[in-house]
Length: 452
Image (cartoon, rainbow, N blue to C red; front, top):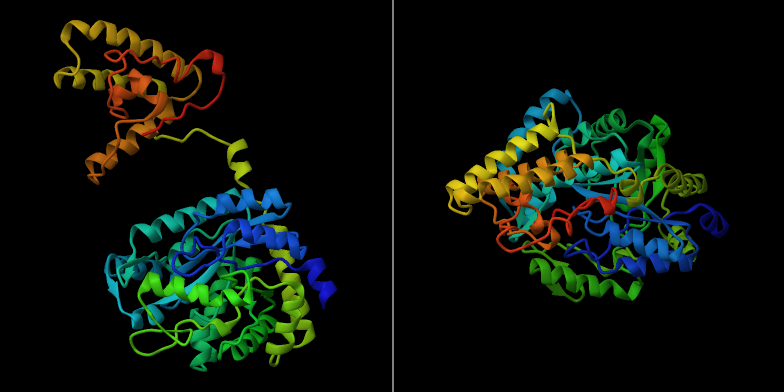
């Protein structure tokens, strides 16, 4: 078993301290531990956030470990099976109901399910980013803390480039297993399989949670019956066994739960998290020990398939932040001629600045001449759509959302075009700011940083 793990195993379903109020390990420590254990790759799937992915990739590269990028999303726990068009209608209503709603501890366990999503490629990363944006924008609240929630129809519509793993016992499938509802359990897996196909993995875990052995058996039987991949998830939230209490303190301080002899208790007296549940970053030897201790009705062939399942996921996950940089494209804007459209915007913007009293009438020609020179340089580099997209984002933030937008930062303040569009506030002519420090022919195709 040890040789099998060392040759094939990749840590899937992993949390860092970016899982706010839950994770208790740094991404740098995760990368170093993966290298020390001999794991060729390692994943990061924080709860409801992707903020740790970039520093995680950097840390992994430094350690010679290949990073796998993902997120464990909070999924609305209503059924995933049925007509997708009807589910979309239902999900739109649920979004309205849940936005800003203060959930109780009971709501937390009844309304929220976990689902691990990993990115195969750039498309998958963009889809996962969109899902996270939706979840964070329309979020529910638990104990005044934001709970980003995604709907099943949103996942289904943005599943391209993503791998799904059924996550831990905090899932809809586990809830059905507890209720012995085999029919609904099968229907849910079929619905997920229809969306993700061969990129769906049923996740076995080895821990001391009361339902885990039964849940593992149900997942194994479903995998065999429907020819779906198995995978072994660590669900690691901290580095070492002795760090379990540290995680308890993190959760207690975040959600104001009570600590009683190391157990996390909610208002109803239910145990939320227990250090004895064994969710740390395990070595190959510790994985074998957990297998012998928690295998239940699972057979050796199930263990082999689950270990090989981690390697399958690692093989399919090709995304890297480097690919986003090397494959950079200017944002698309819905206009026929971006160069002309930008010229029209700047002309109107300068007129507005004159009417506002920022530019005197006798200065108009000098400002027009400067703007023309900048626009020629912007167009020659193919950046017109970039300026238009930034203008639209800033303008919408101010006019529709009432967001506070800064006056601009860095060399971007040297552009009269930015001033005319309202992207920046300082008048570069009045303050003697140079456009060439922001953009000039000598810098070639280097993208200008429009800091706001």
